[in-house]
Length: 522
Image (cartoon, rainbow, N blue to C red):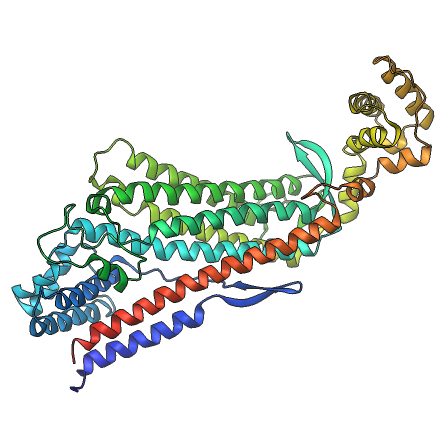
């Protein structure tokens, strides 16, 4: 068997090194959270490929396909393969031009092969090439976004596991509503991020389909094997309808991806705003240690500005803005126009992945540096009346007082306490008995004597009692939080396994393409 030329041997060696690196960097089960080990990878410097790179990959796939299908004779195919390889090598040189437009790329091939080199373009158009290029770039960024989401979720779970018994106030309508635990609160965000990951996986299945070979919109008279092109480029298959492949698919696929990014950004923003709301209180229960996440004022010595939170919140806003930009670009245009075929989707995916990386950094720092003042958090709960729902529940459950009657009494109790600047535990018990008698009398409820002992009443107002008494699925009781933590860990491991599988599939497809392509030079 003839020996490969030195340039082809060198190129193949470079590619083998890249494949080995890709497979080595596939996220493995590396990060332990408590007793569970989940798959994670930092992936903070993804090194996205550019359009020139993907034009090279498409030309390699097309070269293989046109030879296999008799569109180009083997001798000419060998010449084209050598030229494609040389153009790629030339473009990889420092400072070299790397054109992204095929009309600027093709002359580089023809300068080596002459006009016959254009036969690699048989049955293709800049339309299907551009649509394929968009999907190749979006596919790469979508997988990196998934890795960043997994990384953030792992940090959320680690922080939750450290705070299973940390009682904190929870808010609705901007005011304290009920006590919960910090772990219960964080698991809610883990669940939301998990839905983002599920949506991303579902979108990826629709994204990972190939437009290549569809031509401008109606294929061609050449026997182009679109399934083979899809296989060589690591796609799960072709987009069947050629008009859809070249012209429509970029529109709705882009809308889906930027919508997912926007949804994830809203969740990030909600978490950041909650942290920020606590941070700006004079005596917060959650604080950020001074360091790289904080900064000082230029004039006010007492200020410790939460730069980490500010940057992440602004980034979340930029993501939503990027999504809206794509929607506006894609709005009210005829099919086939370039408006929705540009790089706005990739930019939004990059912003979102970067935001999740920053969120993971923030949560990692919070895990190490966050000051969660458990006593202060409990004081905030005890200073308000967020446990009075359980008081009404106890009256119904233990003393057969209808809930609305007990609710009315508890509401009157709150009104009295706040008007007298008293915490719930400070209201004298004889006053509690009087308020109860007056409240139930409005319902003509005949049992006007307060049915609870003083000890039972005082205990009913504690956050510890309310949390321990919770029985519902998904509630803040410790046993249920521990169960949900295990569920979330399992989901994260499953998401990481999916990511590993997709990356391995792409690495194997890339290796297979190069193996077949460089064999043409033998």
